[in-house]
Image (cartoon, rainbow, N blue to C red):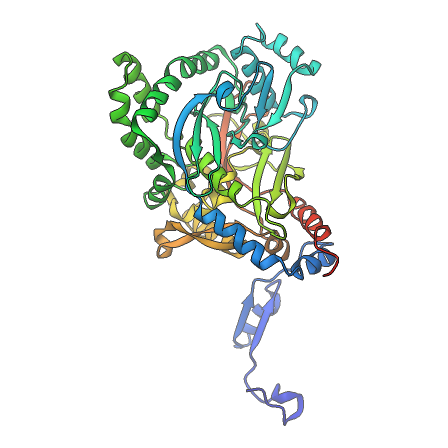
Length: 473
């Protein structure tokens, strides 16, 4: 109990109890004098956000709105129900291309996005050479639109064209649907901006053999519970963004009997199984739309400050928030830091790109790093970093996922539901695991690493949330 009867409340006559924040100089000096010190990791809110923060925090709708949004996120299910061409599933027509991240035009597109669009033109037969494809794309007679505007997600460049085949997932709880293309593997692939003959040949095989085979298998099998596989893969050392080895093998185990019995040449079935089994990232294109279903279920709750999209197009990083509809809040994409393939180095890497940050938005990927200590060897970190990454994300999220659990944290649920106000108040930015595309169109993958969003996305979203607060507040 505080002494109120002596001068200075007994401050100079008893043992001091000191709490410090900020730089450690003061705490270190006190410890050197044998004083007990408790250091608090506190930082002032981001610059210039005080008025908006006060208005949003006082919004009487906020707490209930966030409970609604995050409960929808956590409750959402995800079942693989079909595999279909994008022209059929999404109603795409020739000359239309979807891409990752917020809206962008050809003249501002990054190298890997330009490379993937050139490859898409060649794959669709809309050009006979890269030069001709680039000429058409620069002329503006091709339509570009974000995947997110169509309930779809695309890894890295995320380019989707009408002839590509798509996984179709359904949320049995809220009724939503989401789509993602089939994963091509690593290295020189379209999603990393490569468009050489081997890339186009692989896409043609995926469209003519792999897609139709998977369609037969999924339709024969019935819905595949993707959410259940994600929950299991986190127990088996995957984090669902840069490591999907267990998820890929569990999916293959589920679908294999239906693949083997499909009405198709045995050589095609053997090649499809070999392709999926040899590609540790094949399941990424299934857990991404599963996460998209969860975040879409949490959209459009007035007053909610929860982030429902984080996506990048290689030039801009954009977020969307539940309480502000489809509005994008953008900033220049940062360049990941990590490990490089072969002779590539930091000067070869393009700024952050891809819709795969939907995994972090839903509470896995970088937010589940502690579940996947082996991932640190792929992204250039260490095991303590993986533990710190997950623990720090609890500071900026609204809840813990009841199904996605981390064994090394005593099966604590992954941090889920990024809160704009918590990001602004703490200055802690979401942690994202990602691949790195080459900055020059046609290069492909050059490495993998860690990255955060540009800070300005969050004050911008907070300002829009403040404007949306009713005047009665």
